[in-house]
Image: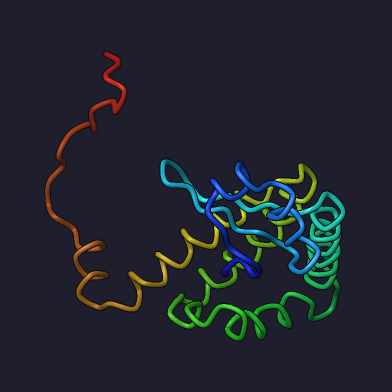
Length: 159
């Protein structure tokens, strides 16, 4: 998902701050390109709070819908392919696991005001679907290689 709004170089904010900040009246967000780091997004506190309110409301509605009996989870499973076309590659048990994990993670992320875990979850499940979409890759990753390669080394070098 892209960032809607105007874009400027970070140096414009530093050198022409009043004119640059005035652009926030025309656009909800200002994308600040940086040479030596990740781009930044500038918005007003009121707009950031509005965005948080909308995401929180959508999360609560999705969670309530999924818990609604009878048929709430089935409705969610029916609409997931429209929202995330790649779920069509997931086997049914994995699709259900994704749905449950998505709702749970969204609720937890909303409770702490940080959606990074939701983005990570979506990326991980999309990669899982990519594996299922490629028969050769799926076969290579699920094949019994017939031997144990021993314990994996500690990535931090601890003994």
